[in-house]
Length: 486
Image (cartoon, rainbow, N blue to C red):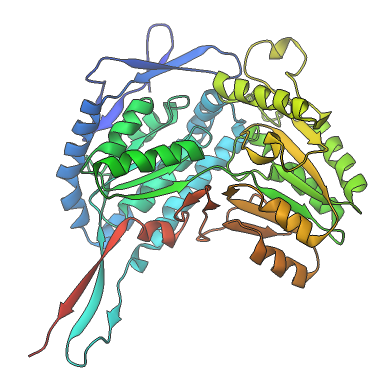
């Protein structure tokens, strides 16, 4: 990525294989959330830039779809290899742009390559069926690419989501337009550099910008397939905007206020460690899948809670580039302000602050968007801290006695992305799995996403499934073909 005379990184959009600036001439600044120092600029894309990207994608898509599947899979595998060659550079860039720690960002880059290779490996599963509808005719289905698809990326895993999700979109034969989040856009510009070395021009286009850029993608009549990861309210706005223009296929992986239910027979050492790990404090709680509602049976409450607080108290917030740091700052001032607001709301609603709840002390935390890992107890289901996604390092702890009670507690909100259940009782595990309203459930586990296991949410946590063959097939339309015999 180029730098100006002052050392600031200057990104460019990728449209039709060319690195370009915005037709409107605008720029978006991005800052290091640990220091609040300006680190770079990217173009502020406009509707005209989206139009350019659609034209480039349209030009490239038919030739891309006409390639043999083995050829498209080969392109993806070479893309994965090229990403790994720049993994260290990408991890460092992600750390200073997102605030996430460098070790986690290196893992994100590597995981994106795993998913790219998975998409290449699943390529020949994009297949239809033959149906014995008549005795003499041949009736079959043919998966068909949409053509041009759009993907809007969140700030928490910007490279990981952009790189891995483009693979699922293009392997069936689509071309894609990606918009990274405006608060962590730099790695997308490097992704553009890698893409130009591997893929035919126009198959992948990257348009940087703010909400107006995303809206232009959603509303473009030639983009009939939209995918988004982010907040539920934004997802609903995307559905409305898309429907204003055309009938579109929109999939959404949205927020979560996810329960971790610890039963009295659980392995308490493992469950206590999982309560911290599942909250994703290493990402400052900025993950849709964070198990931010910890539901402890009354028989284990006084055992597990102190262990959780002790583990949290040893976490070191520090420079995201330091491998010894356990967590970094929030991604932006907006996220910092939102988290501190929810902490104040929880106190006002009567929850008990058991740990954290403020900016860490010390001169190294005077600048940046730092929030201590925070725990609230005495939380009830009517409190906002129990019902609304904070997307920060804030854990709410509940106490329960009866199974029906905890099921009602878990299902009392309008979100349902993940759930973590800790018990050795198979019957109980199966009952909770069936009755807790969540799209991705762990039994005696948390946090890990498994290869080719569909990920997505119930209720307002989204629609559609990602991370495997379900995601790949969602980028196709089913064409029915009927060959009639004489």
